[in-house]
Length: 52
Image (cartoon, rainbow, N blue to C red; front, side, top):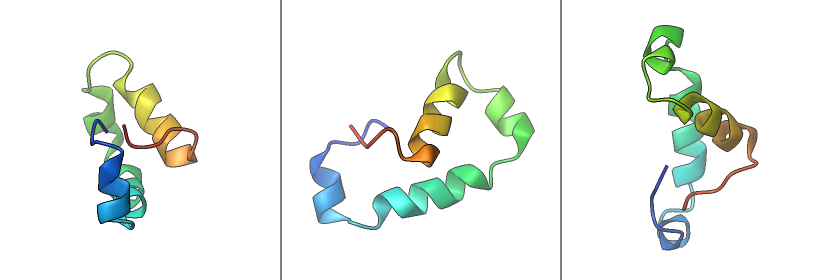
């Protein structure tokens, strides 16, 4: 999630790949993430947050 913005130009399919992986994570894995991380992942999957 904290990849440099330049990585999206180097690897244009990176965002799509990350979204695919995130959406397949089991609920238990997401529940064990640090505070706020699940919400951040949700925004990224929804496309409202880009790689930073």
